[in-house]
Amino acid sequence: MSASATSHIDDVLILGGGLTGLFCALKLAPRPVTILSASPIGEGASSSWAQGGIAAAVSDEDSTAAHAEDTLAVGGGLCEEKIVRLMTEEAGERVRDLLGYGVPFDMDLEGRLQLSREAAHSANRIVRVRGDMAGRAIMNALVAAVRQTPSIRVVEGYLGEELLHEGRLVTGVLARRRGDHERLAFPAHAVVLASGGIGHLFAVTTNPPEANGQGVAMAARAGAVIADAEFVQFHPTALNVGRDPAPLASEALRGEGAVLVNGAGERFMEAVDPLKELAPRDVVARAVFAEIEAGRGAFLDCREAIGTVFAEKFPTVHAACLSAGIDPVREPIPVAPAEHYHMGGILTDANGRSSLDNLWAAGEVASSGAHGANRLASNSLLETVVFAARIAEDIQGQMPNPRTAHWPALNEDIQEATRRNEVERSAITVLRETMAAHVGVQRDEDGLTRTLAIVTALEAQCRRRSILNMMTTAKMVAGAALLRRESRGGHWRRDFPETDPAQARRSFLRLSDVEALAREAAESAVGQAAIAEKVKL
Image (cartoon, rainbow, N blue to C red):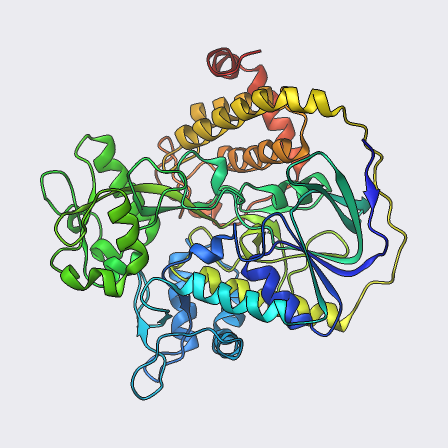
């Protein structure tokens, strides 16, 4: 089957229907914009699932400088200070934008924003909606605004798989219609990647299935620089009830005073960090993981701190608990770390520009340096809206000249593609299990080598570009983790448990760098043994 093209060249094409894509499109109005989304806009987006809220220094007792310092302190020495300071300085304006779009942030009786605190923040600065419903409320408001904006065209049901490009010049996106094998080219004068994170490369994640690394792979395959791919944040308190995705027990629960205990009812964070349950996420995740690995289990006890008002203050978590047969008012909640956020991604500057011409990126698919080695709680939604707005301003200031776009002719046997579905589903299962086992909360050289070898062997069994993209991004993460021989932020090596001051620098890799590592891994004795064990050849 051959690829066909849309009947016109889009002015601006945004890949992704989450918060980044919608906010950028609204900021570009009335400029013509096409949003290309695999799912209906607002669905399948990690933003919709965000429970905590958006961090912004908007009270008289707080300052943007203090917010910046908290962000830098958590970032493990790898934050880009300029990026952090502009992000925190623009936070208040972006919150006002969201209020203007109709987001119903919690207010007090005098009409002031109600603010809460989360881990590693020095002040109350989390703007929320009904305790744990910020993400969904923000997305509902923006979806309504986008639907009412005539300049925004929404194309749903197409999964972006490749960037169309001529050398370093990006000219559009090649997408596959969900449910069949039709591929359609969307030529564009400017492309914005807002395709989200990588959660479903791991067996346990809080992310929706659509967060599977497509955007990073698309950019990497076109030659873009990928930054900080090794830094993956694992949320320490996902509900440990065997669900995929894993429901999230919001950090806001610990902000309200909920404590972590093991199966014997002992608080274990007191001996780990002075901040106890409100220590940075990587610290808490490792402590929770250690309790589970030791066979003691880990539980979030909300009975005393929240108690009978649980359903009112945290309705999303309460409903998730009840559906799993847990009453959080009367019993502790079983928890485990789950992949939650990727600090790495497509290298971008202060205006969201990538290393390729005519390609911008923002949100979790990008790596601006705002988070460094570890993201401060509730800075993800903030980074998204700040850089989505900056991309819109940058595109408005200089639009690339129209070019003729070229796209590849594709011939695909539908029966053969259907036959291979079962093989590829099996490959995805092995990929996710391998990433969870060896590229999770704790890593080492043997496990990372095994991962690169296994993923390389799995690639040979797959043909669909979307599946190959998952493999590509997995290799970028594992390869970067193998090269960083220290522990820092969201990256922790059993064999190099100390932080090395000499490695206090960001990582910048191209796909060709990682492919060389993967070939070496697949040819090694460790790699060969891993392939023989895990991959049916």
